[in-house]
Every structure is written in structure tokens, then in C-alpha cells.
Length: 369
Image 1 (cartoon, rainbow, N blue to C red):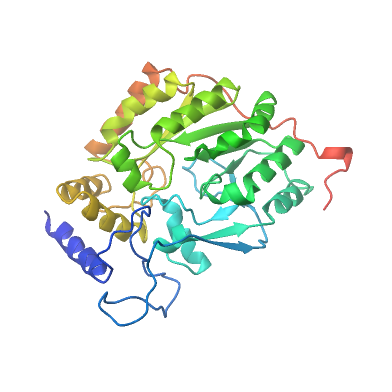
Image 2: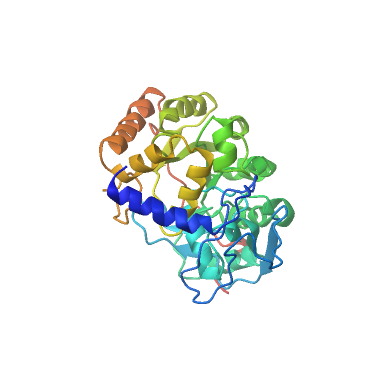
């Protein structure tokens, strides 16, 4: 272990020692990191304290709200989208590596357990989307559903906001891309099939591992890889253009599965792919470190060091064009695998794009508020 790694390890370990030793199964994060926007916070310093702290089964709380906007302009140059919309903030799936965790701090919560337990419900999302699409200055461009958090997370079963937003998009012929880890998307096969005929929808399913023990701890409330392949198969058979997101690839944990994932996805009808390399920005550094050492104590040092090797001695990189791919021998090997197996399994071979020409305001009303 390098001196720098040892120093970081001690800092992170001290951070973790303040937290309960109980492992919360069914959750990715095991504690709440400090919110960098809040100066004064209440925290649990010692598990032996006499304060009345409620831990139990860590239930999920749905917090309903009326939002002001729903479609966001994406400024990042390396995420492959120009606009995104997210009917939910926070995500019960609990993926330990999720970059969206840091965004939860803007709402006044922690990127840790709060992100998984306190899910904000943007109840007026469909109405806001309709208003946005009717704006006279809107020049049709694809909008990504789940640019931040999963639009088919468990909250969708109750609120059906994603369904309502798809109905709006279908009405306007507004092209939309979808990224999900949940099989609940199959409930919307009817409207997705209708939109696919108009070439205004494509979908990606995120698959990170076929190792169920790894998936269950790393992204605890997502569906299994086997079920995700079923989603790809069923929707592609229905005419929906389907792809896979392999992200993140984590050296020492799942990067060796890239070929298997791509082959299985191709066998089930996927025609395009994308991947990201692990990066641990903001509070995710502490959450991932805690998770890694609790779940894989025997080779956690190796994995952490490999991540550092791929980000110039750090575990995060903010440089556009580099941060999502990493650099160095390990990251280069992953990139070469991606290119090689993409060709073998005929991924990303077709020239295809969502149709932005057929957009229309329904009823011939014109673009009015």
C-alpha cells in the first residue's frame, strides 16, 4: 500500500468508525455522509450513546412535491445527451457507485442512506413536460429519461409518472431515450412499441455483473441480470431498439465480465452499447470505500489501488473526455475489450437516430402556454 493510499485509508476508516457496525442489507450505502452545503448537522457519533436513534429496517420515504421545471439542459460534453428529465430525485435502487448521489445534497439530504430512503416525487412532472414542449422556442431534440436517477425505480409502481410522461411524448412525437435497471419498464411495452414504430424511442438496460452476490450488494434493489436480459429480449422482439449500458466497469470486481455481458445482450436482441469506468466523485468516495472494505475485505486494497491507478493516483477525475473512461493500462485494456467485442457481436454497427422531424403540437394549437 502506498503512503498516499494509506493516508486516505486512515481518513476513510476514521470516517467509518463513527457509524454503526450493523450492516443494512438491502441498502447500498451504510451511513449518511456529511452534506457539504449544510454547516450544522446532527449525526450519530457513537453507537453506544443513549440517544434514541431509529434504525430498524430503514424504510423508504416518498416525499411528494410540486416542481418548477422538469427538462434540464445537459452541459457535460461526455455523457451522450443534450437534455434530460427525471420524475424522481433520489433512488431506492441503492447503487453504491451512483454519481447522482451527490445531487441529493442540493435538496438538503445526504448522498448516503438519505439518497435511497428519501425519494422526492415530482408529482407535476407530466404537466411540466407538456408545458415545456408547447413552448414556442423548443426546437425538438431527444430527451433522456433517467439522466440522473432511474425512472423505473420502485416509486414508479405507485406514481406512474414515467408512464404519464411517455404518453405526453407520444402525443407530441417527442423523441426520448430511456436508461433503466428495473424490469418494471415491461409494464409500458404497449406505448413503447407504439413509439418505436414512429422511431421516437430507444432504451438501454444497465447490466454490470452476472455475479448475483456482487449485484445484490453493489446495487441491492435492482432486478437480476437474468431478468434484465428478459427485458431486452421482450422489448426488442416488440420492435423497440434496445441497448446495454455496462457501467461502471470496476477493475478487480466486474471488468472481466464485459465480453459475457455483451454476448448475452446481443443474443437477446440488443444492438448498441455504452460503458463507463468507475470514478468516485464527492461523497461517493467515502460511501464506496466503506462498502468495498465491508464486502470484500480480502482484496479491497487491490481494487482501491487499481481505481487510483486509473485516475492518476486519485479515485476521481473531473476532466471531460477522461473522467468517464479513465486512463492507464487497466482503463486502456477495458477500452480495447469494449472495441473488440463490440465488433465481434456486431454492436453499434447500424446508423440509427431518433426522429426529430415529426414533432408536432397536438390538436394544431400552436406552441402556446
